[in-house]
Image 1 (cartoon, helix red, strand yellow):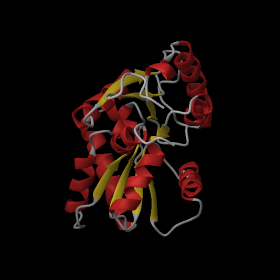
Image 2 (tube, helix red, strand yellow; image 1 turned 120 degrees about the vertical axis):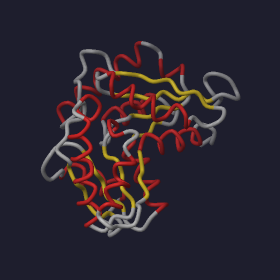
Image 3 (cartoon, rainbow, N blue to C red; image 1 turned 45 degrees about the vertical axis):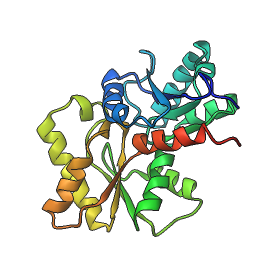
Image 4 (cartoon, rainbow, N blue to C red; image 1 turned 90 degrees about the vertical axis):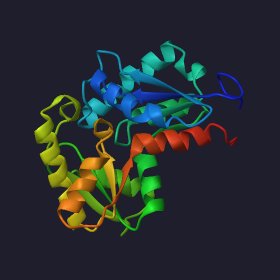
Length: 238
């Protein structure tokens, strides 16, 4: 399948499926400098009637429906060669778009796990919210096809999605470092940033490991790995 734009430039649509522009701005800041050669990134924010944050199944489905209709109505499937859904979950929009196009569509949970499995021994996830995130455990297991000793577990840091970009910087730093120390204690030598709103926060995880006396981990941002993987997929005929 030829590239939608021309035969040399791959156009990737980077989708923020919530309506918070600050999340999209954070993605653009983190990803633009890493754009692969011969690739163009276009950033998309969900319409204003989509949820401002995706925190559960309900907001996931709501955001998917709003984005799906908007993307189809605007002809964006024709305008781009690949699509990255930037929600750290098995987001319904990923599967909905795959039903409508043969072009590559990937989510950041998927790409983060792929990279993490290749660069270390055990990976853990630092994510938003509070409590035991059983949904993410299920999503990781479903993607891997089984339980695995390579998955060290998950820590929720008690921060909201939008709070990561618009909240108090000191509180964000404290919570991110606390969560990172906890995932270090679980034996993770690779840490996945489990939210698109954490884009650019790799340094906080590394600082927390060093301060707690652990070796510096590899830190994986699913949006960054997503761009790298997707830019290759659009050029590989299947």
